[in-house]
Image (cartoon, rainbow, N blue to C red):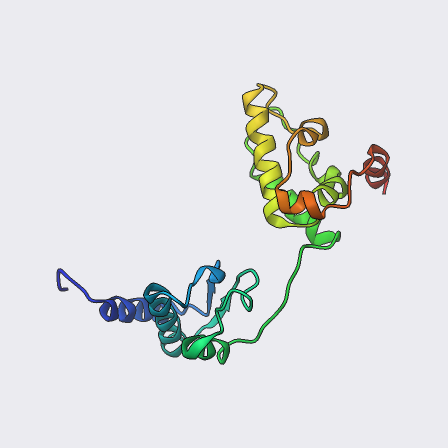
Length: 189
């Protein structure tokens, strides 16, 4: 191998590795951060196009407001748009998947006194607080865990979560607080 590689050498190596590994799915997150008005954004667009043409995989691009961010404008943007099918998503509805996501987050907590299942029992409250937003839920649980470590309790409770502010977007869109009785009714169900 050469001690210095150009961008195409690296791109070809990536294609070869992913093809050899039989990669069949490529996820590209934060696609809305590509600024097509910059040379870096244009280069990245060209690389994504190259990868889609040389890697036998399904590509999923995830981003926020991608149409309004200018991702599909200009020649390069139209080339990306011609390779995509737009799927609009939103926040999670209050269903089984929401509870499963909370259970997965709770399973990764490493708090000494946290009772397993206690966050799942707060699923309805957590949905009301976060509007079903994964990022808001993650922030709330992470901030709650940090607070629980800082105060020495090593457990997350509803009272502790109520003391944690949610992000501005959720705060301005949120429906308001959920009463304790809602969680108790849910626990009985």
